Length: 91
Image (cartoon, rainbow, N blue to C red):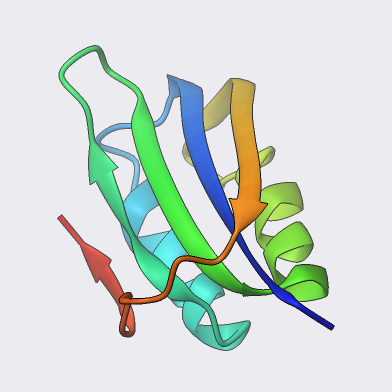
């Protein structure tokens, strides 16, 4: 199975609720590389690369998020993996 990349923008109550740390834990469990960061408009950006099945699991998790958060929408851009990402960081 080929590696893919997703670029996600998560809308809702997603800052200050542990969203990035939870996304990093889930990504680590799934063996994905990438990062999560807060954006100035109150959304969270998640970029992840790895096996398609595992990336799809992360996207599904991002639609729900941690228990303290509330996700209203997830914008998803999919494409081939670009490489260069190591581990999963919180920016």
